[in-house]
Length: 600
Image (tube, rainbow, N blue to C red; front, side, top):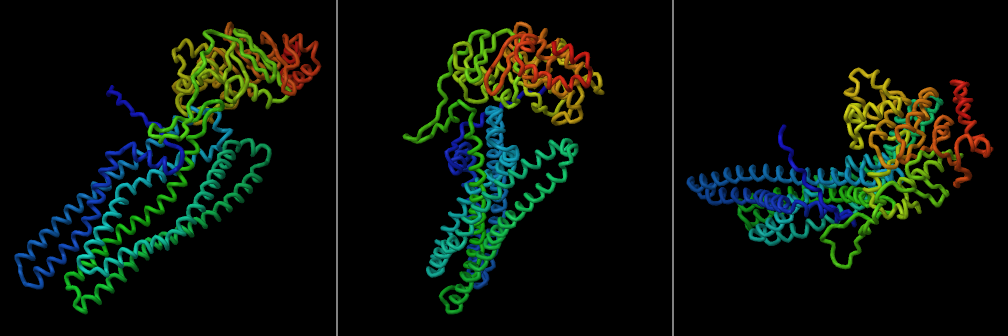
Protein backbone atom coordinates (compact mmCIF):
# COMPACT_ATOMS: atom_id res chain seq x y z
CA UNK A 1 0.00 0.00 0.00
CA UNK A 2 1.47 3.42 -0.95
CA UNK A 3 2.21 5.78 1.95
CA UNK A 4 -0.60 8.17 2.78
CA UNK A 5 0.28 11.75 1.91
CA UNK A 6 -0.79 14.15 4.68
CA UNK A 7 -3.34 16.68 3.47
CA UNK A 8 -2.59 20.29 4.47
CA UNK A 9 -5.16 22.23 6.44
CA UNK A 10 -7.05 24.82 4.35
CA UNK A 11 -6.51 27.51 7.02
CA UNK A 12 -8.86 30.02 8.66
CA UNK A 13 -10.57 32.18 6.01
CA UNK A 14 -11.26 35.89 6.26
CA UNK A 15 -15.01 36.05 5.59
CA UNK A 16 -15.65 39.69 6.47
CA UNK A 17 -16.24 40.48 2.81
CA UNK A 18 -15.76 39.09 -0.72
CA UNK A 19 -12.54 41.01 -1.47
CA UNK A 20 -11.06 40.05 1.91
CA UNK A 21 -11.81 36.41 1.15
CA UNK A 22 -10.13 36.66 -2.28
CA UNK A 23 -7.13 38.38 -0.70
CA UNK A 24 -6.93 35.58 1.88
CA UNK A 25 -6.82 33.01 -0.94
CA UNK A 26 -3.88 34.91 -2.43
CA UNK A 27 -2.06 35.17 0.92
CA UNK A 28 -2.38 31.40 1.45
CA UNK A 29 0.05 30.84 -1.46
CA UNK A 30 2.21 33.95 -1.28
CA UNK A 31 5.29 32.38 -2.89
CA UNK A 32 3.40 31.00 -5.84
CA UNK A 33 1.48 34.25 -6.35
CA UNK A 34 4.72 36.28 -6.28
CA UNK A 35 6.27 33.86 -8.78
CA UNK A 36 3.25 34.27 -11.02
CA UNK A 37 3.52 38.06 -10.75
CA UNK A 38 7.20 38.02 -11.68
CA UNK A 39 6.76 35.61 -14.59
CA UNK A 40 3.62 37.42 -15.79
CA UNK A 41 5.40 40.77 -15.64
CA UNK A 42 8.45 39.42 -17.48
CA UNK A 43 6.18 37.94 -20.16
CA UNK A 44 4.26 41.19 -20.62
CA UNK A 45 7.45 43.27 -20.80
CA UNK A 46 8.93 40.69 -23.17
CA UNK A 47 6.09 41.45 -25.58
CA UNK A 48 7.42 45.01 -25.82
CA UNK A 49 11.04 43.89 -26.39
CA UNK A 50 10.49 42.44 -29.85
CA UNK A 51 9.19 45.69 -31.43
CA UNK A 52 12.30 47.42 -30.11
CA UNK A 53 14.50 44.71 -31.66
CA UNK A 54 12.62 44.94 -34.97
CA UNK A 55 13.12 48.72 -35.01
CA UNK A 56 16.85 48.33 -34.44
CA UNK A 57 17.07 45.69 -37.18
CA UNK A 58 15.40 48.09 -39.62
CA UNK A 59 17.38 51.22 -38.68
CA UNK A 60 20.78 49.60 -38.03
CA UNK A 61 20.62 46.81 -40.61
CA UNK A 62 18.19 47.34 -43.48
CA UNK A 63 18.49 51.12 -43.87
CA UNK A 64 22.31 51.13 -43.59
CA UNK A 65 22.82 47.90 -45.53
CA UNK A 66 24.84 46.39 -42.68
CA UNK A 67 24.32 42.63 -43.06
CA UNK A 68 26.23 41.71 -39.91
CA UNK A 69 24.14 44.06 -37.73
CA UNK A 70 20.95 42.77 -39.37
CA UNK A 71 21.93 39.16 -38.64
CA UNK A 72 22.69 40.00 -35.01
CA UNK A 73 19.36 41.76 -34.50
CA UNK A 74 17.46 38.93 -36.22
CA UNK A 75 19.18 36.41 -33.93
CA UNK A 76 18.18 38.57 -30.98
CA UNK A 77 14.57 38.54 -32.21
CA UNK A 78 14.64 34.71 -32.42
CA UNK A 79 16.13 34.38 -28.92
CA UNK A 80 13.55 36.83 -27.58
CA UNK A 81 10.78 34.77 -29.20
CA UNK A 82 12.04 31.55 -27.60
CA UNK A 83 12.38 33.24 -24.20
CA UNK A 84 8.91 34.73 -24.56
CA UNK A 85 7.45 31.32 -25.36
CA UNK A 86 9.09 29.84 -22.25
CA UNK A 87 7.82 32.69 -20.08
CA UNK A 88 4.33 32.22 -21.53
CA UNK A 89 4.37 28.52 -20.65
CA UNK A 90 5.59 29.20 -17.11
CA UNK A 91 3.04 31.99 -16.67
CA UNK A 92 0.16 29.74 -17.65
CA UNK A 93 1.52 26.84 -15.57
CA UNK A 94 2.01 28.97 -12.46
CA UNK A 95 -1.38 30.69 -12.67
CA UNK A 96 -3.09 27.34 -13.23
CA UNK A 97 -1.53 26.11 -9.98
CA UNK A 98 -2.68 29.30 -8.25
CA UNK A 99 -6.28 28.90 -9.44
CA UNK A 100 -6.41 25.17 -8.69
CA UNK A 101 -5.03 25.70 -5.18
CA UNK A 102 -7.65 28.37 -4.52
CA UNK A 103 -10.44 26.14 -5.88
CA UNK A 104 -9.35 23.14 -3.80
CA UNK A 105 -8.97 25.31 -0.70
CA UNK A 106 -12.44 26.82 -1.10
CA UNK A 107 -14.00 23.41 -1.80
CA UNK A 108 -12.41 21.87 1.29
CA UNK A 109 -13.48 24.81 3.44
CA UNK A 110 -17.06 24.49 2.24
CA UNK A 111 -17.17 20.72 2.75
CA UNK A 112 -15.77 20.97 6.27
CA UNK A 113 -18.09 23.82 7.15
CA UNK A 114 -21.17 22.11 5.73
CA UNK A 115 -20.41 19.01 7.78
CA UNK A 116 -19.94 21.21 10.85
CA UNK A 117 -23.24 23.10 10.65
CA UNK A 118 -25.12 19.94 9.68
CA UNK A 119 -28.88 20.16 10.15
CA UNK A 120 -28.81 23.96 10.39
CA UNK A 121 -28.11 24.19 6.66
CA UNK A 122 -31.55 23.20 5.25
CA UNK A 123 -33.22 25.80 7.48
CA UNK A 124 -30.92 28.59 6.34
CA UNK A 125 -30.10 27.82 2.71
CA UNK A 126 -31.77 25.95 -0.14
CA UNK A 127 -30.06 22.88 -1.57
CA UNK A 128 -29.81 24.52 -4.99
CA UNK A 129 -28.05 27.50 -3.48
CA UNK A 130 -25.46 25.23 -1.89
CA UNK A 131 -24.98 23.35 -5.17
CA UNK A 132 -24.43 26.61 -7.06
CA UNK A 133 -21.95 27.93 -4.49
CA UNK A 134 -20.06 24.63 -4.41
CA UNK A 135 -19.94 24.48 -8.20
CA UNK A 136 -19.48 27.55 -10.36
CA UNK A 137 -18.94 30.12 -7.58
CA UNK A 138 -15.71 28.44 -6.49
CA UNK A 139 -14.37 28.60 -10.04
CA UNK A 140 -15.38 32.23 -10.55
CA UNK A 141 -13.68 33.23 -7.30
CA UNK A 142 -10.46 31.41 -8.16
CA UNK A 143 -10.39 32.99 -11.60
CA UNK A 144 -9.95 36.42 -9.99
CA UNK A 145 -6.47 35.39 -8.85
CA UNK A 146 -5.35 35.66 -12.47
CA UNK A 147 -5.06 39.37 -11.70
CA UNK A 148 -2.12 38.61 -9.41
CA UNK A 149 -0.07 37.35 -12.38
CA UNK A 150 -0.86 38.74 -15.84
CA UNK A 151 -2.90 41.48 -14.16
CA UNK A 152 0.14 42.86 -12.35
CA UNK A 153 2.22 42.31 -15.48
CA UNK A 154 -0.31 44.26 -17.55
CA UNK A 155 0.05 47.33 -15.32
CA UNK A 156 3.86 47.15 -15.40
CA UNK A 157 3.90 46.58 -19.18
CA UNK A 158 1.61 49.58 -19.64
CA UNK A 159 4.10 51.77 -17.77
CA UNK A 160 7.09 50.31 -19.67
CA UNK A 161 5.45 50.90 -23.06
CA UNK A 162 4.62 54.48 -22.06
CA UNK A 163 8.28 55.07 -21.14
CA UNK A 164 9.49 53.56 -24.43
CA UNK A 165 7.05 55.69 -26.39
CA UNK A 166 8.21 58.76 -24.47
CA UNK A 167 11.75 58.08 -25.72
CA UNK A 168 10.41 58.03 -29.29
CA UNK A 169 7.75 60.77 -29.22
CA UNK A 170 6.33 62.37 -26.03
CA UNK A 171 2.96 63.20 -27.69
CA UNK A 172 2.39 59.50 -28.41
CA UNK A 173 3.27 58.63 -24.81
CA UNK A 174 0.79 61.20 -23.51
CA UNK A 175 -1.89 59.80 -25.81
CA UNK A 176 -1.29 56.31 -24.42
CA UNK A 177 -1.14 57.45 -20.79
CA UNK A 178 -4.44 59.30 -21.12
CA UNK A 179 -6.12 56.71 -23.36
CA UNK A 180 -6.27 53.80 -20.93
CA UNK A 181 -8.04 55.80 -18.15
CA UNK A 182 -10.57 56.90 -20.78
CA UNK A 183 -11.18 53.22 -21.61
CA UNK A 184 -11.78 52.54 -17.90
CA UNK A 185 -14.32 55.40 -17.75
CA UNK A 186 -16.16 53.98 -20.76
CA UNK A 187 -16.26 50.37 -19.51
CA UNK A 188 -16.83 51.18 -15.81
CA UNK A 189 -20.64 51.68 -15.99
CA UNK A 190 -21.00 48.39 -17.87
CA UNK A 191 -19.08 46.55 -15.14
CA UNK A 192 -21.25 48.01 -12.38
CA UNK A 193 -24.39 47.08 -14.29
CA UNK A 194 -23.01 43.57 -14.80
CA UNK A 195 -22.41 43.16 -11.06
CA UNK A 196 -26.05 43.96 -10.27
CA UNK A 197 -27.39 41.73 -13.04
CA UNK A 198 -25.02 38.86 -12.16
CA UNK A 199 -26.05 38.94 -8.48
CA UNK A 200 -29.75 38.70 -9.34
CA UNK A 201 -29.16 35.96 -11.88
CA UNK A 202 -27.11 33.83 -9.49
CA UNK A 203 -29.83 34.14 -6.82
CA UNK A 204 -32.58 33.01 -9.19
CA UNK A 205 -30.39 30.22 -10.54
CA UNK A 206 -29.94 28.81 -7.03
CA UNK A 207 -33.68 28.95 -6.36
CA UNK A 208 -34.52 27.21 -9.64
CA UNK A 209 -31.92 24.50 -8.97
CA UNK A 210 -33.56 23.86 -5.60
CA UNK A 211 -36.98 23.58 -7.23
CA UNK A 212 -35.63 21.13 -9.81
CA UNK A 213 -34.10 19.00 -7.05
CA UNK A 214 -37.39 18.97 -5.13
CA UNK A 215 -39.34 17.90 -8.22
CA UNK A 216 -36.91 15.09 -9.05
CA UNK A 217 -36.84 13.87 -5.44
CA UNK A 218 -40.66 13.80 -5.25
CA UNK A 219 -41.39 12.64 -8.80
CA UNK A 220 -43.08 9.41 -7.77
CA UNK A 221 -45.31 11.21 -5.29
CA UNK A 222 -46.18 13.91 -7.82
CA UNK A 223 -47.10 11.28 -10.39
CA UNK A 224 -49.22 9.47 -7.83
CA UNK A 225 -51.31 12.52 -6.92
CA UNK A 226 -51.47 13.86 -10.47
CA UNK A 227 -49.39 16.93 -9.72
CA UNK A 228 -46.59 16.34 -12.19
CA UNK A 229 -48.08 18.60 -14.84
CA UNK A 230 -48.77 21.43 -12.39
CA UNK A 231 -45.22 21.44 -11.05
CA UNK A 232 -43.82 21.14 -14.56
CA UNK A 233 -45.74 24.26 -15.61
CA UNK A 234 -44.57 26.15 -12.54
CA UNK A 235 -40.99 25.13 -13.19
CA UNK A 236 -41.29 26.16 -16.84
CA UNK A 237 -42.60 29.58 -15.79
CA UNK A 238 -39.71 30.11 -13.36
CA UNK A 239 -37.30 28.84 -16.00
CA UNK A 240 -38.60 31.44 -18.46
CA UNK A 241 -38.04 34.13 -15.83
CA UNK A 242 -34.47 32.93 -15.34
CA UNK A 243 -34.02 32.85 -19.12
CA UNK A 244 -35.06 36.51 -19.33
CA UNK A 245 -32.61 37.39 -16.56
CA UNK A 246 -29.93 35.40 -18.37
CA UNK A 247 -30.56 37.40 -21.53
CA UNK A 248 -30.14 40.56 -19.48
CA UNK A 249 -26.81 39.36 -18.11
CA UNK A 250 -25.79 38.17 -21.57
CA UNK A 251 -26.59 41.56 -23.10
CA UNK A 252 -24.30 43.35 -20.66
CA UNK A 253 -21.67 40.66 -21.03
CA UNK A 254 -21.75 40.92 -24.82
CA UNK A 255 -21.13 44.67 -24.64
CA UNK A 256 -18.17 44.09 -22.35
CA UNK A 257 -16.77 41.33 -24.59
CA UNK A 258 -17.18 43.56 -27.63
CA UNK A 259 -15.50 46.43 -25.78
CA UNK A 260 -12.47 44.30 -24.86
CA UNK A 261 -11.89 43.72 -28.59
CA UNK A 262 -13.08 46.95 -30.21
CA UNK A 263 -11.66 49.53 -27.81
CA UNK A 264 -8.04 48.25 -27.89
CA UNK A 265 -8.33 47.99 -31.70
CA UNK A 266 -9.55 51.56 -32.04
CA UNK A 267 -6.86 52.65 -29.62
CA UNK A 268 -4.21 50.91 -31.74
CA UNK A 269 -5.54 52.47 -34.94
CA UNK A 270 -5.45 55.99 -33.46
CA UNK A 271 -1.85 55.65 -32.22
CA UNK A 272 -0.63 54.17 -35.51
CA UNK A 273 -2.31 57.01 -37.43
CA UNK A 274 -0.54 59.57 -35.25
CA UNK A 275 2.80 57.74 -35.68
CA UNK A 276 2.38 57.59 -39.47
CA UNK A 277 1.76 61.34 -39.65
CA UNK A 278 4.87 61.94 -37.52
CA UNK A 279 6.92 59.66 -39.80
CA UNK A 280 5.71 61.57 -42.86
CA UNK A 281 6.74 64.89 -41.31
CA UNK A 282 10.13 63.44 -40.35
CA UNK A 283 9.61 63.66 -36.59
CA UNK A 284 10.36 59.94 -36.24
CA UNK A 285 12.14 57.38 -38.45
CA UNK A 286 10.49 54.51 -40.29
CA UNK A 287 12.04 52.07 -37.83
CA UNK A 288 10.65 54.08 -34.96
CA UNK A 289 7.21 54.07 -36.62
CA UNK A 290 7.38 50.27 -36.88
CA UNK A 291 8.46 50.16 -33.25
CA UNK A 292 5.54 52.38 -32.24
CA UNK A 293 3.16 50.02 -34.05
CA UNK A 294 4.76 47.07 -32.25
CA UNK A 295 4.59 48.80 -28.86
CA UNK A 296 0.95 49.70 -29.24
CA UNK A 297 0.07 46.29 -30.71
CA UNK A 298 1.78 44.83 -27.66
CA UNK A 299 -0.21 47.19 -25.47
CA UNK A 300 -3.42 45.60 -26.77
CA UNK A 301 -2.58 42.47 -24.76
CA UNK A 302 -2.25 44.14 -21.32
CA UNK A 303 -5.27 46.37 -22.03
CA UNK A 304 -7.28 43.26 -22.92
CA UNK A 305 -6.04 41.54 -19.75
CA UNK A 306 -7.08 44.53 -17.65
CA UNK A 307 -10.56 44.68 -19.19
CA UNK A 308 -11.01 40.92 -18.93
CA UNK A 309 -9.66 40.99 -15.37
CA UNK A 310 -12.15 43.69 -14.44
CA UNK A 311 -14.98 41.51 -15.70
CA UNK A 312 -13.64 38.49 -13.81
CA UNK A 313 -13.27 40.62 -10.67
CA UNK A 314 -16.92 41.67 -10.82
CA UNK A 315 -18.10 38.10 -11.37
CA UNK A 316 -15.70 36.72 -8.77
CA UNK A 317 -16.76 39.33 -6.22
CA UNK A 318 -20.39 38.21 -6.52
CA UNK A 319 -19.31 34.56 -6.18
CA UNK A 320 -16.96 35.24 -3.24
CA UNK A 321 -19.73 37.06 -1.39
CA UNK A 322 -21.93 33.97 -1.66
CA UNK A 323 -19.08 31.73 -0.44
CA UNK A 324 -18.38 34.05 2.51
CA UNK A 325 -22.08 34.17 3.42
CA UNK A 326 -22.20 30.37 3.52
CA UNK A 327 -19.01 30.15 5.58
CA UNK A 328 -20.51 32.65 8.04
CA UNK A 329 -23.40 30.31 8.82
CA UNK A 330 -22.93 28.74 12.24
CA UNK A 331 -24.89 26.16 14.24
CA UNK A 332 -27.47 27.72 16.52
CA UNK A 333 -26.02 28.63 19.87
CA UNK A 334 -22.41 28.49 18.68
CA UNK A 335 -20.12 31.50 18.25
CA UNK A 336 -19.21 32.70 14.76
CA UNK A 337 -16.41 31.18 12.73
CA UNK A 338 -12.90 32.15 13.82
CA UNK A 339 -11.37 34.95 11.82
CA UNK A 340 -7.99 35.03 10.16
CA UNK A 341 -5.07 35.69 12.54
CA UNK A 342 -4.14 38.80 10.57
CA UNK A 343 -7.26 40.71 11.65
CA UNK A 344 -6.29 44.32 12.38
CA UNK A 345 -6.66 45.70 15.91
CA UNK A 346 -10.12 46.96 16.74
CA UNK A 347 -11.92 44.48 14.51
CA UNK A 348 -14.33 42.36 16.61
CA UNK A 349 -13.64 38.65 16.27
CA UNK A 350 -16.33 36.12 17.19
CA UNK A 351 -14.90 33.37 19.38
CA UNK A 352 -16.67 30.33 20.66
CA UNK A 353 -16.96 30.45 24.45
CA UNK A 354 -15.29 27.79 26.55
CA UNK A 355 -17.34 24.58 26.60
CA UNK A 356 -18.98 23.46 29.82
CA UNK A 357 -18.12 19.91 30.93
CA UNK A 358 -20.64 17.33 29.80
CA UNK A 359 -22.08 14.83 32.29
CA UNK A 360 -19.50 12.15 33.06
CA UNK A 361 -22.02 9.37 32.43
CA UNK A 362 -25.63 8.86 31.36
CA UNK A 363 -27.82 11.72 32.59
CA UNK A 364 -31.41 12.90 32.26
CA UNK A 365 -32.45 15.30 29.51
CA UNK A 366 -35.05 17.90 30.41
CA UNK A 367 -36.94 20.13 27.97
CA UNK A 368 -38.55 23.01 29.85
CA UNK A 369 -40.59 24.09 26.83
CA UNK A 370 -42.70 20.90 26.85
CA UNK A 371 -42.03 19.82 30.43
CA UNK A 372 -40.57 16.51 29.20
CA UNK A 373 -37.90 14.67 31.19
CA UNK A 374 -36.03 11.86 29.47
CA UNK A 375 -34.78 9.48 32.14
CA UNK A 376 -31.32 8.02 31.58
CA UNK A 377 -31.27 4.35 30.61
CA UNK A 378 -34.99 4.20 29.79
CA UNK A 379 -36.92 3.83 26.52
CA UNK A 380 -39.33 6.74 26.26
CA UNK A 381 -41.96 7.11 23.55
CA UNK A 382 -43.52 10.49 22.77
CA UNK A 383 -46.87 10.56 20.96
CA UNK A 384 -47.48 14.04 19.51
CA UNK A 385 -50.81 15.29 18.20
CA UNK A 386 -48.89 17.54 15.78
CA UNK A 387 -45.92 15.94 13.95
CA UNK A 388 -44.26 19.36 13.76
CA UNK A 389 -44.11 19.46 17.58
CA UNK A 390 -42.36 16.08 17.59
CA UNK A 391 -39.74 17.26 15.07
CA UNK A 392 -39.17 20.47 17.04
CA UNK A 393 -38.69 18.42 20.23
CA UNK A 394 -36.12 16.20 18.49
CA UNK A 395 -34.25 19.31 17.30
CA UNK A 396 -34.09 20.68 20.84
CA UNK A 397 -33.02 17.40 22.45
CA UNK A 398 -30.35 16.91 19.75
CA UNK A 399 -29.16 20.53 20.01
CA UNK A 400 -29.98 21.50 16.48
CA UNK A 401 -31.62 24.72 17.69
CA UNK A 402 -31.03 27.03 20.64
CA UNK A 403 -33.12 25.90 23.60
CA UNK A 404 -33.26 25.62 27.39
CA UNK A 405 -32.75 21.84 27.38
CA UNK A 406 -30.53 20.63 30.21
CA UNK A 407 -28.38 17.52 30.26
CA UNK A 408 -28.02 16.54 33.85
CA UNK A 409 -27.37 19.89 35.52
CA UNK A 410 -25.68 21.42 32.46
CA UNK A 411 -27.39 23.50 29.73
CA UNK A 412 -27.13 21.44 26.56
CA UNK A 413 -26.07 24.47 24.49
CA UNK A 414 -23.10 25.02 26.82
CA UNK A 415 -21.61 21.60 26.10
CA UNK A 416 -19.15 21.29 23.23
CA UNK A 417 -20.94 20.51 19.99
CA UNK A 418 -18.55 17.65 19.17
CA UNK A 419 -19.31 16.07 22.54
CA UNK A 420 -23.06 16.37 21.95
CA UNK A 421 -22.83 14.86 18.48
CA UNK A 422 -20.71 11.96 19.75
CA UNK A 423 -23.15 11.03 22.53
CA UNK A 424 -26.59 12.14 21.29
CA UNK A 425 -27.86 10.96 17.90
CA UNK A 426 -31.08 12.11 16.22
CA UNK A 427 -32.09 9.66 13.48
CA UNK A 428 -34.74 10.94 11.08
CA UNK A 429 -36.84 8.44 9.17
CA UNK A 430 -35.82 10.08 5.88
CA UNK A 431 -32.16 10.90 6.60
CA UNK A 432 -29.82 10.93 3.61
CA UNK A 433 -28.26 7.73 2.31
CA UNK A 434 -25.02 8.23 0.38
CA UNK A 435 -23.90 6.07 -2.51
CA UNK A 436 -21.57 3.16 -1.79
CA UNK A 437 -21.67 -0.43 -0.69
CA UNK A 438 -24.28 -1.34 1.88
CA UNK A 439 -21.50 -2.01 4.39
CA UNK A 440 -20.11 1.50 3.85
CA UNK A 441 -23.57 3.01 4.26
CA UNK A 442 -24.08 1.20 7.56
CA UNK A 443 -20.67 2.39 8.77
CA UNK A 444 -21.45 6.01 7.91
CA UNK A 445 -21.18 7.12 11.52
CA UNK A 446 -17.82 5.43 12.08
CA UNK A 447 -19.49 2.41 13.62
CA UNK A 448 -18.02 -1.03 14.20
CA UNK A 449 -18.36 -2.86 10.87
CA UNK A 450 -17.54 -6.30 12.20
CA UNK A 451 -19.85 -9.15 11.32
CA UNK A 452 -21.32 -9.42 14.83
CA UNK A 453 -22.43 -5.78 15.31
CA UNK A 454 -23.78 -5.54 11.77
CA UNK A 455 -25.80 -8.73 12.09
CA UNK A 456 -27.20 -7.57 15.43
CA UNK A 457 -28.20 -4.15 14.02
CA UNK A 458 -29.79 -5.73 10.95
CA UNK A 459 -31.73 -8.17 13.09
CA UNK A 460 -32.99 -5.44 15.42
CA UNK A 461 -34.17 -3.37 12.44
CA UNK A 462 -35.60 -6.51 10.77
CA UNK A 463 -33.45 -5.81 7.70
CA UNK A 464 -31.86 -9.24 7.19
CA UNK A 465 -34.15 -9.86 4.22
CA UNK A 466 -32.94 -6.63 2.61
CA UNK A 467 -29.36 -7.90 2.64
CA UNK A 468 -30.39 -11.40 1.51
CA UNK A 469 -32.23 -9.96 -1.49
CA UNK A 470 -29.18 -8.05 -2.75
CA UNK A 471 -26.93 -9.85 -5.26
CA UNK A 472 -23.69 -9.29 -3.32
CA UNK A 473 -25.11 -8.85 0.16
CA UNK A 474 -23.32 -6.17 2.16
CA UNK A 475 -20.87 -5.66 -0.73
CA UNK A 476 -23.66 -4.59 -3.11
CA UNK A 477 -23.25 -1.09 -4.52
CA UNK A 478 -26.19 1.16 -3.62
CA UNK A 479 -26.87 4.37 -5.55
CA UNK A 480 -27.45 7.81 -4.02
CA UNK A 481 -30.47 7.91 -1.69
CA UNK A 482 -30.76 4.12 -2.17
CA UNK A 483 -33.39 4.64 -4.86
CA UNK A 484 -33.16 0.95 -5.86
CA UNK A 485 -34.61 0.00 -2.47
CA UNK A 486 -38.24 0.41 -1.41
CA UNK A 487 -39.28 3.01 1.15
CA UNK A 488 -39.60 0.41 3.90
CA UNK A 489 -36.21 -1.10 3.08
CA UNK A 490 -34.52 2.30 3.16
CA UNK A 491 -36.11 3.06 6.52
CA UNK A 492 -34.86 -0.18 8.05
CA UNK A 493 -31.34 0.44 6.71
CA UNK A 494 -31.42 3.91 8.31
CA UNK A 495 -32.48 2.37 11.62
CA UNK A 496 -29.69 -0.23 11.42
CA UNK A 497 -27.16 2.53 10.75
CA UNK A 498 -28.35 4.48 13.79
CA UNK A 499 -28.18 1.38 16.00
CA UNK A 500 -24.64 0.59 14.80
CA UNK A 501 -23.48 4.01 15.99
CA UNK A 502 -24.42 2.92 19.54
CA UNK A 503 -24.93 6.45 20.90
CA UNK A 504 -25.49 7.09 24.57
CA UNK A 505 -28.79 8.80 23.68
CA UNK A 506 -30.69 7.69 20.58
CA UNK A 507 -33.63 9.78 19.36
CA UNK A 508 -35.69 8.09 16.64
CA UNK A 509 -38.20 10.12 14.63
CA UNK A 510 -40.99 7.91 13.25
CA UNK A 511 -38.60 5.02 12.56
CA UNK A 512 -41.22 2.57 11.22
CA UNK A 513 -43.66 4.77 9.30
CA UNK A 514 -42.99 2.96 5.98
CA UNK A 515 -42.99 -0.69 7.12
CA UNK A 516 -45.85 -3.16 7.42
CA UNK A 517 -47.45 -4.11 10.74
CA UNK A 518 -45.72 -7.48 11.14
CA UNK A 519 -42.26 -5.98 10.53
CA UNK A 520 -43.06 -3.08 12.84
CA UNK A 521 -44.04 -5.45 15.63
CA UNK A 522 -40.72 -7.31 15.32
CA UNK A 523 -38.77 -4.05 15.33
CA UNK A 524 -40.61 -2.74 18.40
CA UNK A 525 -39.87 -5.88 20.38
CA UNK A 526 -36.23 -6.18 19.31
CA UNK A 527 -35.50 -2.46 19.72
CA UNK A 528 -36.50 -2.52 23.37
CA UNK A 529 -34.13 -5.43 24.00
CA UNK A 530 -31.26 -4.00 21.94
CA UNK A 531 -31.34 -0.63 23.72
CA UNK A 532 -31.87 -1.99 27.21
CA UNK A 533 -30.08 0.17 29.79
CA UNK A 534 -29.42 3.01 27.31
CA UNK A 535 -31.44 6.17 26.82
CA UNK A 536 -33.77 5.95 23.84
CA UNK A 537 -36.51 8.35 22.70
CA UNK A 538 -39.02 7.30 20.04
CA UNK A 539 -41.22 10.00 18.52
CA UNK A 540 -44.14 8.11 16.98
CA UNK A 541 -47.86 7.41 17.30
CA UNK A 542 -47.75 3.75 16.30
CA UNK A 543 -49.41 1.62 19.00
CA UNK A 544 -46.94 -1.18 18.32
CA UNK A 545 -43.98 1.04 19.26
CA UNK A 546 -45.80 2.76 22.12
CA UNK A 547 -46.74 -0.58 23.63
CA UNK A 548 -43.08 -1.62 24.05
CA UNK A 549 -41.90 1.65 25.63
CA UNK A 550 -41.00 1.87 29.32
CA UNK A 551 -42.83 5.20 29.50
CA UNK A 552 -45.10 7.05 27.09
CA UNK A 553 -45.60 10.84 27.06
CA UNK A 554 -48.51 12.52 25.29
CA UNK A 555 -47.51 15.81 23.64
CA UNK A 556 -50.42 18.11 22.87
CA UNK A 557 -50.27 21.79 21.83
CA UNK A 558 -46.57 21.92 22.66
CA UNK A 559 -46.85 20.56 26.22
CA UNK A 560 -46.68 17.12 27.84
CA UNK A 561 -50.20 16.53 29.15
CA UNK A 562 -49.87 12.94 30.38
CA UNK A 563 -47.23 10.28 31.08
CA UNK A 564 -47.45 6.64 31.95
CA UNK A 565 -47.52 3.25 30.31
CA UNK A 566 -49.29 2.78 26.99
CA UNK A 567 -52.11 0.85 28.66
CA UNK A 568 -52.54 3.46 31.40
CA UNK A 569 -52.81 6.32 28.93
CA UNK A 570 -55.36 4.42 26.85
CA UNK A 571 -57.53 4.18 29.95
CA UNK A 572 -56.99 7.68 31.36
CA UNK A 573 -56.39 10.02 28.38
CA UNK A 574 -59.18 10.27 25.81
CA UNK A 575 -57.06 12.45 23.51
CA UNK A 576 -54.25 9.90 23.55
CA UNK A 577 -56.77 7.14 22.85
CA UNK A 578 -58.11 9.00 19.80
CA UNK A 579 -54.56 9.71 18.57
CA UNK A 580 -53.48 6.08 18.82
CA UNK A 581 -56.74 4.81 17.36
CA UNK A 582 -56.26 7.11 14.35
CA UNK A 583 -52.86 5.55 13.74
CA UNK A 584 -54.18 2.05 14.33
CA UNK A 585 -56.76 2.44 11.55
CA UNK A 586 -54.05 1.72 8.97
CA UNK A 587 -52.78 -1.13 11.09
CA UNK A 588 -56.30 -2.57 11.28
CA UNK A 589 -56.43 -2.77 7.51
CA UNK A 590 -53.26 -4.92 7.56
CA UNK A 591 -54.14 -7.22 10.45
CA UNK A 592 -57.15 -6.62 12.74
CA UNK A 593 -55.81 -9.00 15.38
CA UNK A 594 -52.52 -7.09 15.60
CA UNK A 595 -54.43 -3.81 15.78
CA UNK A 596 -56.57 -4.88 18.71
CA UNK A 597 -53.58 -6.33 20.54
CA UNK A 598 -51.50 -3.22 20.00
CA UNK A 599 -54.17 -0.93 21.44
CA UNK A 600 -53.99 -2.85 24.72
